[in-house]
Length: 227
Image (cartoon, rainbow, N blue to C red; front, side, top):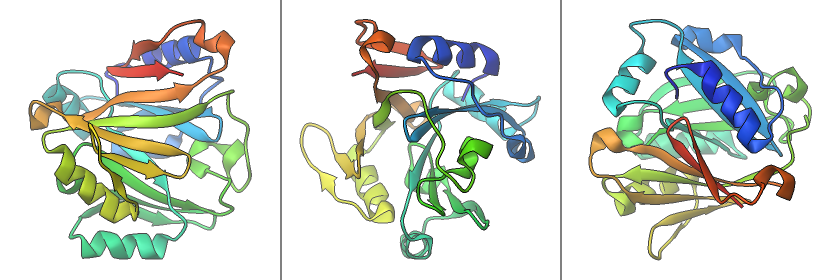
């Protein structure tokens, strides 16, 4: 989430070698503007308040500036996922069922660290939120892959277990709790306070020419580790 959309969009394109983003007019209902980039078969989205007095603007103020705010996961069975959400007493803040995708956003106060979205596209290779090229079909993303996100929370172990229950995955213990996903991972690290919780790091795999020998770059309050 960014206070100003365009500067972050330009840096993502320049630093990560991304293509042109999709601007979803539907996010206006949430008081937002956005840009969605396709990286391989995954996506990086930037949102910004469309005007004053929005929930997004208030979150930026509480968090002290730009930062990661949301994590979206593709799940194979939305009915089963929603049942797990209900059994875990997690509140749903928004949901929709369309012919080519179903989506469910979960309350960040219940899961902690980020707004978690569960989505089931049909066909599985499509992703309506990525734009017309991905609606009901497989689009083409920039070369690379989103490999891992890191979420800072004040109780990493407890939060990891809660996310794992909703996502129906296992927690891998070690120096930090990690959720091992199909082709990716979510790691949890300590945050000093609730106000500092959020997505703090995104690991992306890029071709050598885009990585240009760099190990990391900070964009929009998030560290992008380049692999």
